[in-house]
Length: 363
Ligand code: AHM
Ligand code: MG
Image 1: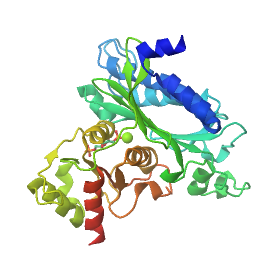
Image 2 (image 1 turned 90 degrees about the vertical axis):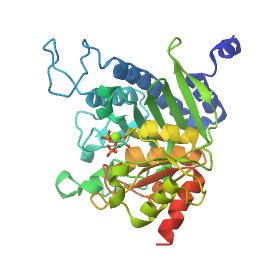
Image 3 (image 1 turned 120 degrees about the vertical axis):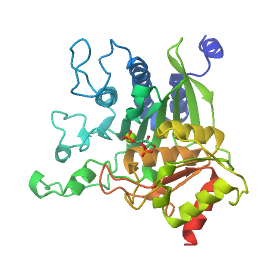
């Protein structure tokens, strides 16, 4: 009966995770986390879709009052709470870090959000990092947005002096204590959810990338692209080109070559930029291309955050056969020193990213 159901519905995310768990019992607990992510992404998709209706409580900015005179909450705040709660109730997560939280949050002793009081208890195997609604400034104009999530294992080597008390504990020690400061190479899973013409959920467990599409009639994510591979060559770049004059010289040179068709591939590139990382990376994965938010003279580390934007998206990109670099080093190998640290990012089709890496090395 189960098979017959799946023949007509396709492989749902739930079935996919159950099969993964049967074959890999050591990551069974991840199934529970993805159950929470599955539900949270459907709920966030609905919130984004309904956010522009006059009756919506989520329109506009926090602190504003809507036409009915009711207080409104910013969508970032609502989606952050939603994801946090969904993950908390799995009982598999000790700590999380989010773009919307100043410091890592202890999910169990959550009466406090002070990183210094975080204690990982038995059974709490994972640490989650996320940006609940990336590109949220786009929502009011109906432009795609997304959620980015990274999952780490609790890292035993990240132990600071247990005597470290509130006053003589540096911010960095407190955050390490919270186990959130791990390089992307330690990620056990990453996912993004894209809210656009369709709602997509892309994930990797370190064995390729799988894309699911939300079937709204079923209310289920259905596997639509197994083992996604990004084309090795491409003709699209996706960066905020208004900053070009401020980028590093090697990058400026490469991009000018792509524009003029004088680069390594000899192709004349097109430019596509939504200004929503999840949407831009999703297109880059499927059509091939380069997505970047490089450093510039004003912001040497660019804009994107290493922990919950750069690292998880780089993991997905690499798992699809692409590359991700700052120009000088692999994004996945950088250990964050603090939670909201920024990182220059250039990711996408192998040959074009290699061209960038070579240009930096020849500097
Ligand atoms: P946010 O986390 O505040 O939403 O900002 C991140 C977004 C990314 O989705 C996107 O790649 C970038 O900001 C666009 O920035 P810009 O407007 O400078 O091009
Ligand atoms: Mg963001």
